[in-house]
Image (cartoon, rainbow, N blue to C red):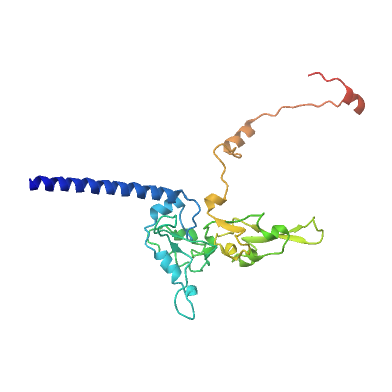
Length: 274
């Protein structure tokens, strides 16, 4: 009788454990799908495309540690590291737990020349090769963490108020952000100096976003896949080799145009046969 009770208890506990494990798996799967579906996550320099990054990242935290301990991040008075740019996602951050990210409005990427966060990555989730220049040296200007976008209705420069905070904060001044002169027709006296972001030079560091003087930043960094357009498969492509060959083999048709002998009044009033 005792053996029978023990077996029943064992079976019940086993079924309960399997059920809890399955439920936990479903909850984790749902959580992982939810955070992967969020496209507004900015990763450190050299990060692979999001799907590949999440597969490659082993959540070791070495990039965050390197960012926190960089020389420029040490408080000279206390000798202790300040809060770093790179954060490691925790529960409730709406990002996959353990993965690195940063929030420019809080702490942007300061574009360290030696890029300490990248060489320490053991899995290749942060791709060092993508940050090498022609001399095979690490070059932070090769980074493409995202793209800064100006919301014109919120930017006070577009209201006619002089402001160049984002322009001055940009570490790639006059390349990533330029100021465009535009006449102010409303007043006739003042000119607009409008910030314009250039994709090829913008690294997505977010210094402009942090420097923006409006309560909610009028310039903000978005991941490249969100910020940039992409033509659909239905988009008409340009000329290719086959098009060029068809033009080469085509034969031209000669056409002639006869000039009307009517004057302009007669021509406009003439009946036209269709």
